[in-house]
Length: 384
Image (cartoon, rainbow, N blue to C red; front, side, top):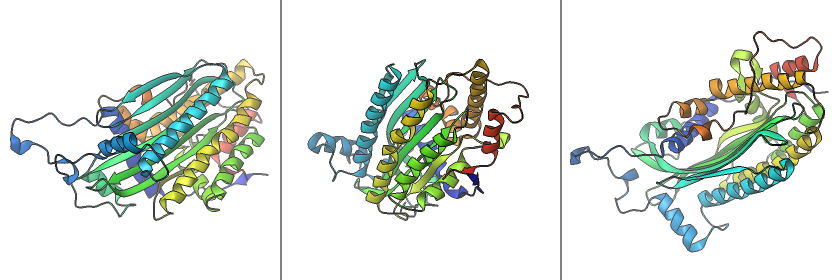
């Protein structure tokens, strides 16, 4: 029978991971717009990253490479990660559309300085009240302050430069089912890289994870979900699952409620060459993302048509309120994006449910299924 576990996680790496999230959101939100030009030549900004003015940016280099050679196993990791997340986005969207019977609304956007995104959102479906599957590709420039912060975990970053070009790509997914017996699920896998003057890779790292948030607890569902994740982790490192599960329990914690957001999964950030080589970590990311549909589809297929009462639907809405609280109060990347002028609000808030509920001083009944869920959320469980 599952038992309690003590949650311990490396807070320094979580904090640095937020630097990446904030930089990514900031760049998407502002379009990485340069400051207005000054009439005084002495006030003009220095050349980008120490490059000559006629040197191509990494975005320009990548566009040329894709046009001339396409993307292959020998392409830069930037291009391989971009192709990987876009391919998986299409596969996931097709699968969910077949399951729900409702098409996604697809919103494509481009960034003038390179990159862009594809937001796929389904609302008021037959199975999902709201589902979002988004990809983002961002090219931009890191200021010296951000470089200094990131050097805590990435010593390859040059501390003496004023700026560095960077690339970031990620796939994010959140599914909120209609049926309160079916759990919400979240997923995000991402890659970050900085470039040298000649466009070659300077520093790089991967991050991501996935977690399950039920309104009603079915142990067999949670065990199935965690088992799929563990198998994906074990194929690359036997220590990964336990290590990244603790990190997940720590990060997705609603402090003012003294409970976790859900029943966990895995969470990690800043996995670079001090962890494993780039190819090994890319294979790990591929394995984790590949495990998502087999881990979640059997659960949603089993629960999507279960009978439920109005009271159970109201409990789901209360739990969704807690989900909203975490995202708006404790998720630092979301907070940064919302406070950025000109932000892409629709993209930033994609993770929120379509409906939620707050009820004054609500307490679950003693001995109820609702109380059991809350008890589990207050003390994370070892499911395997």
